[in-house]
Image 1 (tube, rainbow, N blue to C red):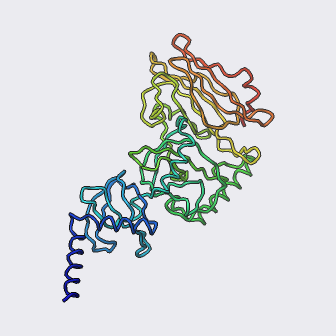
Image 2 (cartoon, rainbow, N blue to C red):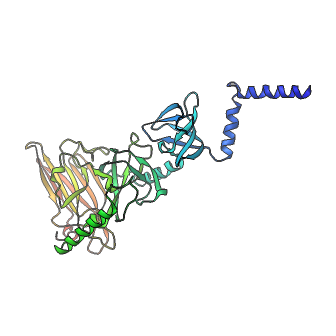
Amino acid sequence: MKLRSLTSATLLIVVCLASAGCGLVDQAVTGVTTMVGLNDTAVVISKAAQIRTSYAVVAADLLEVKRGDELDILDQTEFEKVMWYRVRANDEAKTEGWIEAQHVITSDVLDKSRKLAQEFKDLPAQAAGQLRAASNLRLAPEMNPNNVLFKLASGSNFEIMGWKYVPKQEVNDTDDSNRTAPSQVRRARNEEIEAAMESSEGERLDEKYDIWYKVRLDRSVSPAPAGWLFGRQVELSIPSDIIYFQSNNRKFIAWQRLDSENVDRGAVGRASTPGNWVVLTRSNIVKGADGVEPDFDGITVLAFDKYDQSYYTAWRTSGEVWGAVPMRIEGTGDNKVFVLQLRGPDGQMVEKRFSVFKDKSRLRVTPPEDIAQFQTKSK
């Protein structure tokens, strides 16, 4: 009789605990989750994704979550080589279910991206770009599966804060590389190197190195604010009004607007009204010093004549320089200064300031007095 009463009492307690009014089950589960080290959070990175009843193919959808939504991670598992997280949403019902890992980024990984963004938080963008195809956003400029933040969608836009030339290698990660077969890449490279040797040209930059871009991302594109992208998938978003001044043997590598219409964000993008620009250029010839390649080897200032409605070259380097970004612009109104790092004859990097001002309706540039010492004759 006592046993039956005890069983009834136990059943009553279980029913009470399971009811919505008690709220103790959720507390107990949360306590267990904390003890096993799974009390982590994640942020949704996909434009939209579904929390499902399970990770099975026939599972039902429970709740749609959107980019930027924060979720609590309760558990994780790998099913058919795909990672899934069991999560709790922050909706009114506190929906719990499973979401594929590719749709979220965990808080510890997100913190690493934010730390990278701190390195250039006060610097202006040097250029802008767009992805030709989906590519992995990484924590470092190397093909290491352990440094992947997440896969960024094709067509994603971003600001370019810097770049790095890395010795070219065969790439097996199709999320980061083009689809050209390795044998075709080797054959094409060998043929072009031999052709360059026969014509007494220097070794080509794009044949020796791959370029990696350090990028800053807007929150509308990604909760992760920064990372590295493999250059083969990046298309530079050169402003449409100045792209026609780019030549085949000297490419635009960075640009910033000089006139009063300049803004910190968006001034490097593809769409713009005509204005005044400082452009950094790069030839395709290897010219490394102490094993390091310059970020740029030419400087051009383009100005827009609003009366003639045409561009003219206000100033440019007469020879090649050895320069490094970031480029900064200081001043207000029509009087500006752009600041660059140039390598001097002694091999030391020196900060150089170029003054820009209006002389009547024409834009003028006053370079540093010793600029000739930083230029070499163009090949």
